[in-house]
Length: 524
Image (cartoon, rainbow, N blue to C red; front, top):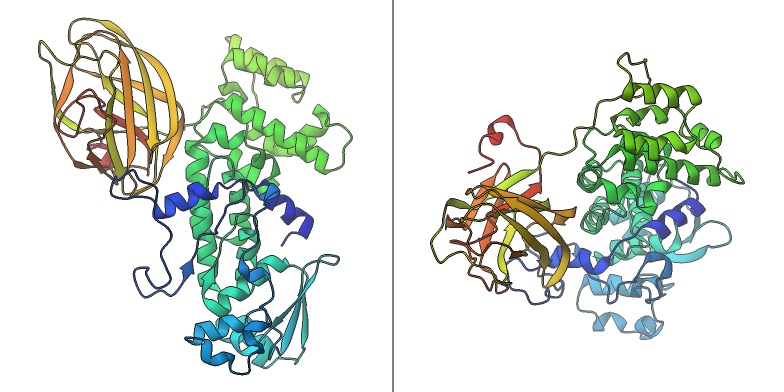
């Protein structure tokens, strides 16, 4: 485990928007656009699992600037709660009585000094409670090697994280917070509290964004969490440009950097990947206490990883504007790569010239046929909208739209994706319609992450030829590959588009990889 200053840096760089994370966890699955309901009360969750994950009362704007009060678990239990000689009678059950003992000196038979020197906290605990929740604590207190110590130093676990873990052991309650969840995961792993570890991972999965995916990938490798790693890779692949330009990318370790730059499925230009690698090298030089990162020092920081960059796969213009002027290449490499672009007899170079494969967009086509009539489909500034939800996490890339039914025409389209009334992405695009019933694709600037079992609203306002094709025989549910879509009408639609017919015939998305058999059924 890294020392505390490194962990603290990780926490401060972890950019998690808690409101969005909890909205994803408890979001509306029925299409009602009212705000999400409060988190379920204890005992209301489905199944027999006793774990209660409760939403903090207020979410900090960012981990580094959080001013909200700590959860109740971080303060010692009020003396009045157990000062009454008959305090047990006021407690409804075992959990309530255990809660009264949490962080309480009453009957405490062991103390922990958590935290690194200079920032420690002495925490009371009860061996029986800890031993029933953790095999590590059982071995520590009652196993063959138990030494009977009454004060145990835990320098590698932060006090806040240790208290979060103890609260879970005493009460089955977990209050996740962005700035403590990684440290809590470390504590849960160290003391083998698997349900708490899974709750931490679940919180991190719902909180993943392009801004923190690279940093969390680095941590998930450290904690050996393959599912969290896979979620991080999904976001890094689909939203590669945003992920690589995030502050968190410059904080990843050398092995994680190597894994990212080796990735065949990164969905962005090679020039973006090159600039991200330079940004990492610049920060690595500063971490090594270099006065000013020079091209020579940055190349040294990258080492052999430099050759994972596919510089010849850039366009000549991109190469001239970035790598050729960066100073990180030798004069011979700069010349050889330039000749690779321009000469008939190309010199041998150490950089791969094969472009990365990226991701292949899949298409959900929701109509079985299209048509046109003399008085339809008209626009005049009105909005075409449809609501949809999916059963697996995907990334929306853009829409397919119908064009003119009255000869070739140019269109201007304002497109938008919303969730619960909040705009997630918008863009203005242009496309040329050749007068056929084909669909024409328009794209958002970046792919947008769409969570499962939650309704989103896709909208488009077209400006162009008045009459166009429109879809008919629409399907309310269909499956593309391994992703099932459900559609319902949107109150935002003022131009007649709905489930059965209208505009926005296609949703383009990145999703789980298709098998050979699924490739045949992508377009229905």
